[in-house]
Length: 309
Image (cartoon, rainbow, N blue to C red; front, top):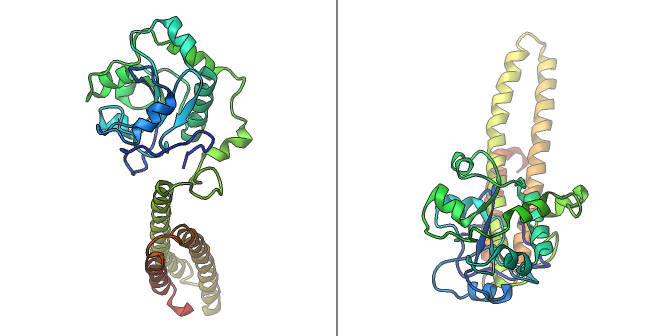
């Protein structure tokens, strides 16, 4: 999960727990001059169901929400599902120079680059027509989302926002993430690699992730059972003219390969279950949760490989 512990202080009160594929960086402005920290604090209690992934001011940036999750910022389902929201404190009426003087550009650019690397988003300004076609990733504004997907009357960040300056900084080679470091921002690691969750909200989000991974692995294990039966029939058809010993040898080889694959999946499941067990160790009834999942794993193993007992 792309949470960056060096700047994270969340989550907000309102967000969608579903993981959605991101393809856009969305630039907003807050229509006020509060600090990024104040905006982030307000996001934890605000009554209007609005949220953002980031808040940026003249000297700081705060991450409010995991970028895999849905912030409520765009006014449209497409925008909420697929855009990472950057709320920059400022006014739509500001001049270009005021914007240039009032944004922590190095921090903003660094973080957008991290998100572009994590979500495979290109550093390019999309037109409204390109957004409607939904074939390219890139940088958009709240006003662009209004014109492309509707659902809002907001026109921020305003016509004087220096988007050309932002794009120039984003495409400069200096300061781009080192390719060998990009693994930090990919995959499902939470709070960067092996750190324990720092709040109860982190725990709940992390438990949700482990549950999703467990279900995915169980489905993969059950699918392997169906594929194994199909392969056995294919082997029997292929060796119809072979001797009895040759047929048995090929079936034994197939069974060994299938069992090795199932054991690999089962080991991955055990790893997920161990993480769940550790995560809920301080919850009210963790034993019941872990026992139920382990029982499911046991049933899957019996159904797939009954000869193992």
